[in-house]
Amino acid sequence: MIFTIPKSKILRFSHQIPASRVTKEIQGVLKEIFEVDSRALPANCASSLSPFRQSFRRRRLRVSSSSVREGEDRISLLPEPLLCHILSFLTTEEAVWTSVLSSPWRHLWKCVPRLELDTSSFASDRVCVDFIDEFLAFQGKPYYLREFKLTIDHDVFHSDVSLYEPCLGRVDMRKMERYQVENRFEQLSVDNIATPPLTLSACEALVCLKLHFVRLNEFVSLSLPCLKTMYLEDVVMPSDAAAEALISSSPVLEVLKISVSVDDAVVALRVCSKSLKSFALKGVERFYVRGRYSVLIDAPKLEHLSLMDYYHFKSFKIISAADVVKVDIDVEFGLMKGHLSETKMIYNLVKSFSGVEDMTISWTSLKFIYSSFHQMKRTPKFHDLTVLRATMCLNASPKLIPVVLESCPNLKHLTLELLIHYPEVIARLSNVLPRCLVSSLVSVEMDSPVTEITTELDLARYFMKNSTTFKKVVLRLNQSSTGEKHKPGVLEQLIESPRRSSLCQFEVIPVVTISESSIA
Image (cartoon, rainbow, N blue to C red; front, side):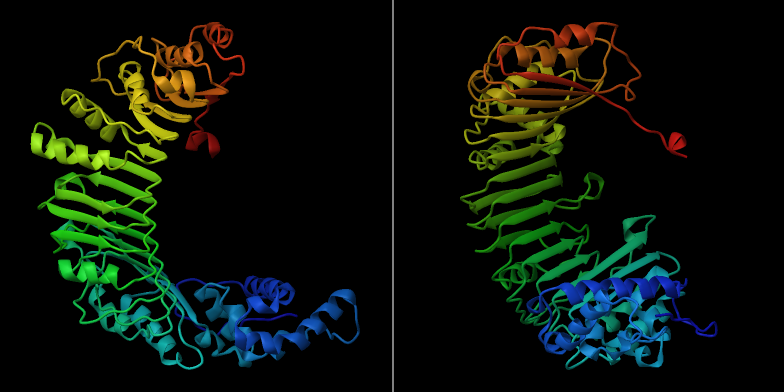
């Protein structure tokens, strides 16, 4: 089957897609659909598929059949619902280009229940908005829009973001399953950035909601009965009540990610959900902090909690999260240091993670927790922790590693990313043997730069010499970060050094950084 695109055809996208590519994409999707189980197709497609599937299979067995004339348009004979289903697997831009394949395809792309656009593909914001309006004009029974994704890619001086507010308001959310608006920008300062306002309404079929740098308007009532995933990144909330209602209106919500906006009106964030399993909270950058707010988490099914960026909370309470299994902590606690009441608040927060099984922690967080709590003589204990991934200063690691291991008496797997941080004084290895080192720890992986004083090798030797349960030690050495090299024979001596565990395997892997120039 051969299609040609008339040269006189003008579309509003800023670049063209070859007809051969569009045809190839359609044929590929068609092949997959004919081979898939009918139960996996939409109801309005499955009933029409059977006779065409039989024809397709016969043609696969008789490729050179004379019944298939050269250049015959067999795809256009398919029922319209099935054609729309085929186009839904293409990008919106590719689907638009099918309008020039033949006359039956002229308006078919407008019936596809999926719209995905990047404003950078259009000559201006006005052209993009007109395009969306033209598409929405064709939407309606039985072609309800089910997936909408708009990326507003602009700079602060040459874009008119206000055009998108009425446009987004015309999107029918009744049958929407996936809705995403991402506002990108080239910023000089935060105050220059325009945030398109957005009003949410009843979305009875919505499963996934992702918003980035938009401003939510107040809403009287909201119902999201099917919503399972919600990302709110730099979304400006109108009030505490609106933020809480957005979460509580989602009775089956499982994944929630919130990045605090600089302009947010929220001062008390309440995350109350009986179904929530994963929650990620990202604070604003340190230099943009304008105030402190409180956080309350009431999520009895919470399994994964992630905290990122700057800690500027007035209070942080976890009422119920009985089975938190995994925690990621990458938080700067800097300004809290020296304030006893606030240090105790952070201690209680960390203590609430005592039952976790899997933890990832950054050097900034690790340093604050162990230095501050050591002064309080209240080092936290993680009795259920079996997997720990930590970033650590190489110079401080000999002193800190035994302390950290002592906090994790049942640890099994340890991954360390060791960094050069010159202000840190070089520490000596402690003689204390943590419980997990002689009873449970089975594997250690270390990523480290090569240093002149070979601290990274001393650490590997420490683990192999003292652990009775080790099965594997992996040391990845990055020479490019420091320019240092080990003396000849040093690594060989380390490999041959005695090991307390007869089952321990030791592996040294050189990390080679490929520069862009060498790739070119």
